[in-house]
Image (cartoon, rainbow, N blue to C red; front, side):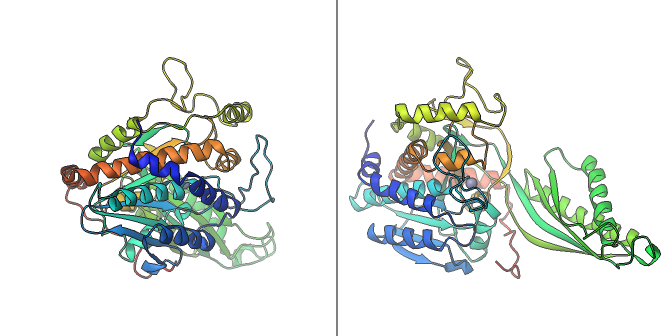
Length: 455
Ligand SMILES: [Zn+2]
């Protein structure tokens, strides 16, 4: 069914794809998205939005609004790329330039999808089909999972009645299952160096402390709830076997389906690190890098969005797109069956009916922060071949061609239409807020980015 939202996005299609392409060709990593921000600003101002860049103490953030009064509908765009994920548009792995960043999480599409929805909703307000305000939030640094937290610390998102978030993916689904909350931190150890063979008794090994911490954490795993995930990498494990290391460090992620479980586990790991320091007569210190909330999908918004997705004409893949996806399937690295399959065909249906998914996913997104400030919903649409692994070169390739652009436009149209439904029926917003109150269980959002943490 053709609607005003879809029509407007089709009118602007070339410009939207052009911007997604330009950002794909100029990938910028977290908090360095200066070019992207400039292009968004230009685009939004041309569309008549009031645009501010760099508020909330976050230089590459954007807030752009159109309209007045309530309800206020927010769209949460992102635009950062991943280090080392450069890739040309091809079905074989080949970087544009080895080591350069690339859009392997497809945020070049993500941001523009939200932009498309925002300008289409603006057009509806302008034509007096709806009343209210539309806000496009440009959110940097999602790959570090703290961009929205830093923005929230600076006061962002409190103006919203609801928020919509879309992420590129390999199917059309609304995410009611949870993504995990997270803390990211480093543990540093200081010891005393010595010749490892000649006078080992004088050495106090920082590496020993690090290893004992990791061992302690393995035991801790037995006594946490099932949803807790702990992973680490060693940043510094000393220089050579014959030198007792006087410094060592590791980088930890703690994830869980609730913020409380993350905080609890984090505090316990700090104790393990202190214990390891006592055992080895070294010093430990923890450097907190940031954190985010789990997602909290709002059922009322999920239903509105599902209706909008069903009413929005999907963007059929061309022969060329299908061939590209088929080739990609031949070279994909993850095992078949890792993704939900269609019961009838046994295949994952990229053009299948949209649905609401209640499966928890153990990845994280800082969208969760915003979803604890106001009612929000996250969804995915197909922008890759079926089996493209997350953060893979295949994702980068698909984000620069037809498959990615089609999924992006479908997302923009669906979100825009869902936004329009809310503006036209304030009762829905009221219901979403009631649901939010129930889901929050009287808890308040406590920003995981402390006052003194520098960006
Ligand atoms: Zn992403």
